[in-house]
Amino acid sequence: MLKKRIIPKFLIRGGRLVKMRRFHDDQREAGNPVSTAKVYDSYGVDELLFVDIDATNEGRVVTGNVIERVAEEVFVPLTVGGGVTTLEQIESLLKSGADKVSINSAAIENPDFITQAASRFGDQCIVVSIDYQADEFGKKRVVGRGGTTPTSQDPIEFAQRMQDLHAGEILMSSIDRDGMMNGYDLDLIGDLSNRLSIPLIASSGAGSLADCKAALDAGASAITISSMFIFTDHSPIKVRTYLATNGVYVRNQKGSRS
Image 1 (cartoon, rainbow, N blue to C red):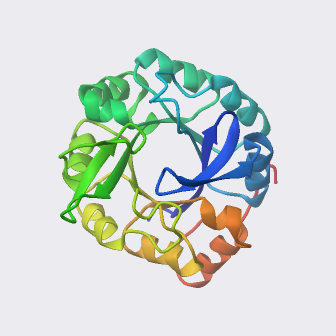
Image 2: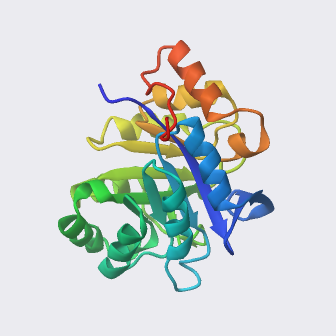
């Protein structure tokens, strides 16, 4: 059985960490990415996820120098995303210190790009990030370009297609739950986890220790946490201890420098 993973999620804007609600509301400053990453590294998290939230709509890729600085200071796996549209950009990010690259809008606009990327760099390096939101009829739909461009695609069907195209992992983010700290989308996690043979990372909604356990129990292979770490006194140590105490199979607490 694979151990469940705890992944702090970092949103980068202008070289700083920020946090919003529902992708666009109530922006709050959350610190320096390098120093914050070092803190989480010392807590012994399993991975770190960095997303440049403006890169796609500004027509550029996530800034490589931020990743280089983080990679010099921490020794846990890094997943990096934001504006990735070419194989050359993936190669550059991997050389900068990323272990995996997260692809979002390009997967919607050019699905074959996922197959090309997996073929060149290996499935294990390619994470497809899927943002979704309920439409006016309550139907969940994939949304591209940083939560600004709705599509007609069903998120579960789209995730299955990305698996078929050789994505190594699927990262699911609910725009409606983002930053709200009211729990993960357990129905979608449960349904999708039964249909995927690759790891499912659940994002958006962590507000309590019980929320974290519920998402993993529902079938997620990993959870990302942002607001709960930034705005409450819950730490990765508390999360890991709670999960282990309550029967979730997680890695033993140990910082990468230990």
